[in-house]
Image (cartoon, rainbow over all chains, first blue to last red; front, side):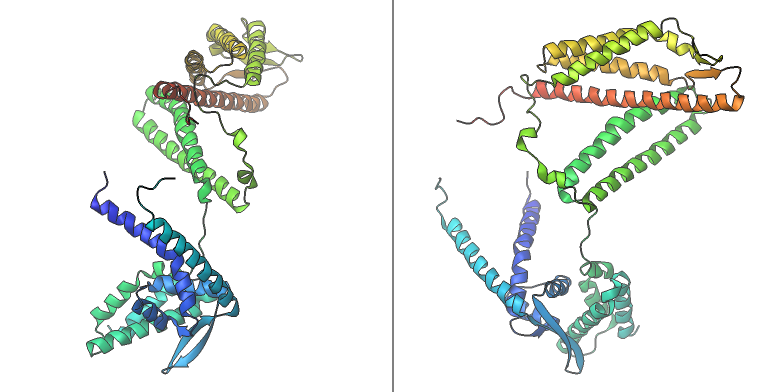
Length: 120
Length: 330
């Protein structure tokens, strides 16, 4: 029998899986404007998408190594910071991801809105 | 302790786990992020962070090794899709081969030993060593499979999947025929060549002297060989896999393992003698031949045990499963 604790754990795991793919899209979209890591994290958190630093920085590196982001070290407020922005390839990929996301979201909304007792 | 010292120690600990090529770059960014966080916390508190506050910031960031692991590309030893096969192979090797082998080869001498405590200790030491070695070898084999991308896993064919267990399923007739032919050949050899045989004499005076255990098991082996041959012949004529067939095979398997166990109770099965054979050569030949016999007996016992477990599983499955098909298409 599943307890409330089990259900919470199951929910947490499913939520984590759900978020995993979304994070990359959110980061790419946010970096249409150039930002450094700390500011990016704050911007995402302020918009309701809290992201752990240990997830964000490795993700930024991975996206950069895939050519979707470009970065440069620059001094700001007397400190060196690494600024990231979307690359031209990243822009193309983001557009495709955006279309895919909208399609998936519309499908999911349709499925969720369908009457519960409807059968095929 | 100064706050900068604690931060440096933390960064240094992370650095230890980072890939060399990216160490400085990652650390610079991590340090910058932590400093931004510290500044923000200080602004909120209205005073510089105390040691406890910094400890809280660093603890919130996480263990240095965990932080560094995020930057390291994921490496896997075994392809996750191969894990079910890996587990199955380990289970077969450890539970169905290694454990019974140890039971046959090592437990029996425990009872004969003058110092059972020492023998028991040796048994556990050898069992652990063999267990670790087997797990290691299987793991390395699967890691190599993963490394060199075994393509055969993608070449599967639904028509080659095993049949669903049930009363109507048949066994491979070619196997039964081969078993029958081999069984008859073994029976003829044993009956003709081993009858009242205590030694083999060759030209030049070389003699292979058989240990007394061979004459002691002459009749049981003869009977068992004939029984195996007849069972295979019957299965060839009636290939349906039935409970009777499984019971018969289980009985023959048990008898074969017992026979191998009896033979394994001695350590010398043949001896060499001859006028032109030096003591060193005789000892060398003895070691080699007896070693081969031992390995052969152990292999026979292992394969037979494996078959016995398989037959047992078939019997249990037949008992618990309904005879209806898995899927009913209506």
